[in-house]
Amino acid sequence: MKLSEKILEKYKEFHKAFKNEQYSFYILKGGRGSAKSTHISIELVLDLIKNETNQVVIRKVQRTLENSVYNQIIWAIDYLEVNQFFKINKSPLKITYIPRGNFVIFLGADDTDKIKGLKSVKYPFSRVWIEELADFKTEEEISKIVNSVFREELGNLDLSYKAIFSYNPPKQKHHWVNKKFETITIPKHYYIMHTTYLDNPHMSKEFLLEAEHTKATNLNKYKWEYLGEAIGSGVVPFSNLIFEEITNENINSFDNIRQGLDWGYSIDPASFMRMYFDKTRRKLYIFGEIYQVKLSNAKLAEMIKNRKWDDTKITADSAEPKSIDNLKKDYGITKIVGAKKGKGSVESGEKWLDELDAIIIDPARCPNTAREFETADYAIDRQGNTLMRIEDKDNHSIDAVRYGMENDMVKRIARRVSGKRTGF
Image (tube, rainbow, N blue to C red; front, side, top):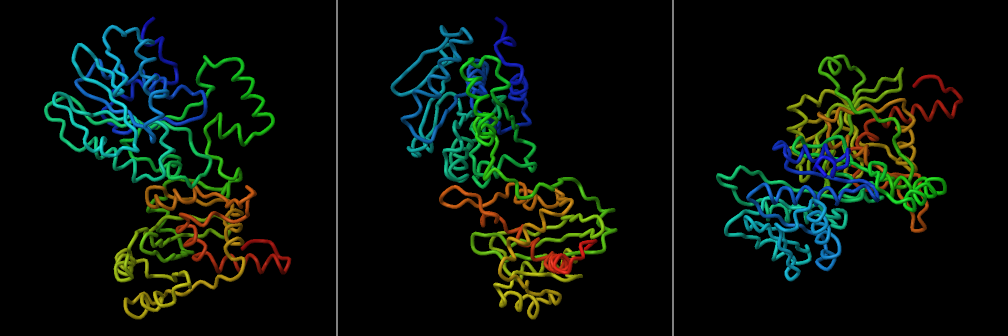
């Protein structure tokens, strides 16, 4: 059987992309039965044969390696019919390509010293596969692992570093994995592929029957487990999002400018939003952001002035009156006021935003805002019931938008109360 016949049609794209030096990170995600690990193992075996490089395969816990990724690589060797070229070691877990002597080792992230000490005399470790990425609690854990592997120049070898991440998306939209990879703001050196069991024609009849039964009886569970969707609470807070370029020509024509500010803390970013509100068409355009951790009031004021965004009113979180006073009196941001807020203002503000005909965000100008709105999810109580308020986590831009649109929201509510519902 030819190699092309051993690779599923959907994964031929990944096979081609793995040869492309444009990409450093390959993210393969999706639902159950999508053959992610199968094709990663095939690609790594082929790479071990072709290139003068070593590989390391990592999972969160050491004891899970043998019955998962280790046996998966052995399966790929057998599937590719190249058994005679490989030596299989079980203690330690190691598979060596005999003709050259380069190898793949398997490590658990619970022993970080071994990962930090990765070193080989003859061939560099230039490939890393991290399986079940969502098992890691923070992105920092992954960064440390990758940096430990990608720490040295590869010299004259015709190689570049490549990392593969594979996982089934967690249900929670606020999980760091979803926030990083379930978004339109993806760096150009990241290759992302999403697959499902529908891309795999070799699934058993029993698997397919169970998938169809789940689809008929519990659609959200089906979307999460079988389609690999981060369903969160199962309800989308903002169903009116549009991500597209907002040109300079558009911006120069805007008149109803709104601005909002959510104060940052030591670990939370300050978020300043600049927007245009088209009252007639009920569309909100978000085209300017300042978004930074540990941003002093002095630096914030400087950034606002440099962008000439001190030209119109700024509505800031009133929980910090000293900061408002500081920006106004000490740094010359004279058009700043505190938000009125009040009981139920968060829920009503989020509802008002969702009822707009469109929230248009320029992802190039406002990448953090795009990410926050895209990954926003409703909070869930201890019993698993959906609460009609957005999870109070990673929502700094959303809060800043609410503050900036506060007066428009009040006018809308007032008109509803009076029975007049035409226009804004």
